[in-house]
Image 1 (cartoon, one colour):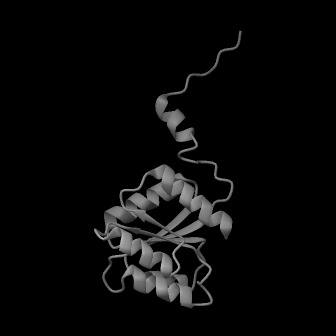
Image 2 (cartoon, rainbow, N blue to C red):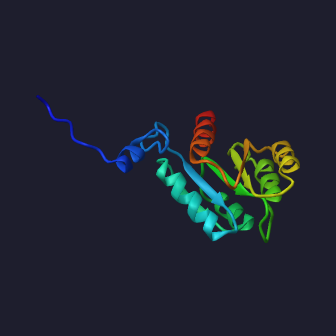
Image 3 (cartoon, rainbow, N blue to C red):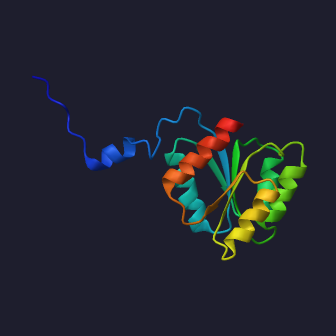
Amino acid sequence: MHSVPSTSPAASFEQSSTWGISVSNPGRILIVDDSRTIRIKLKKSVEALGHEAEAVENGRAALDLLAVENFDLVLLDIMMPVMDGFEVLTSLKSSPRTRDVPVIVISGLDDEMSSVVKAIELGAEDFLPKDFELALLKARISTCIEKK
């Protein structure tokens, strides 16, 4: 008779496909958000999904970093000081170096539908609300990285 080691519910959750600890195609993801709390939440979520994450606090810092480093995906807030997400997206999509880097726009704007439309028109791959579910974030990240 073989005994099966018991697994705690927490351990089972961490090993579940929701967390995706063993992603088949890990990526390098840049997080751009002026909220320190959101940056930390996104960075932890992205890393829990098995990807590498860098985080910056504004659009100018993002463009500066993207000018010298390569990323597989950008998670971009819309409302930020210095340079808003729409300006960053426009700049990314007009540069030969960054035009093919997929961007997922994440925002808590009240006029979400018009923001979604504008972000997609400017070249965003997708749009998520700030109160996203981890499973949805995982699916969107996986889809963007696989396309690349």
